[in-house]
Length: 203
Image (cartoon, rainbow, N blue to C red; front, side):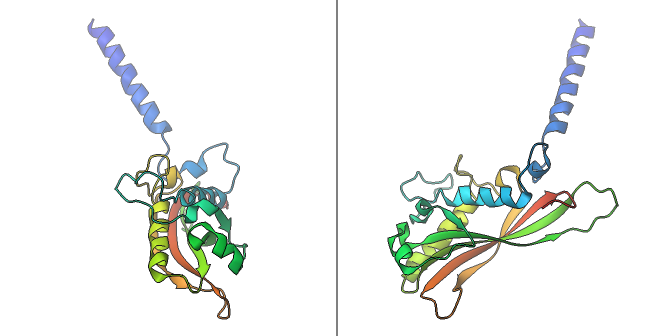
């Protein structure tokens, strides 16, 4: 009986070690076999998925926050999209969401055959609106973008690891701007630092 119990204990220990070794570390989902999309694209797609969940008719998030605007219903565009006044007036929440993936800094390689390093990708989420938009409403746009990016839309719970894509995300800054001084179209924006693992020559 003792031998049987000892064998079962050893088997359970080996199984636990195997499961632990197989579980990816935070931010290493990008390094798993079978991922053909670039790291940038995977992170951008996750940002888009989260921003598209902004909807005041949805259930409150796990922390009690209720989305205040409809801007997620318009979808999320890439940075190459230009909006005109008519598009913005007809948009849900009078705003259109856009995502811009910008410069990424990379940690230095310490050894020639190093398999991975820590990188930081800067992403800016913008809500474009007309210049005469109510400032109170624009602050709601900022609130909703911040809540959406830090929340897993499937669970409604805070997730700062983007479902395993990142080690951590943080807000770098937020505020307002316009692409050109003469434009009647402005935007409010939240800039993010996405810290994640990356193979040395991957994008």
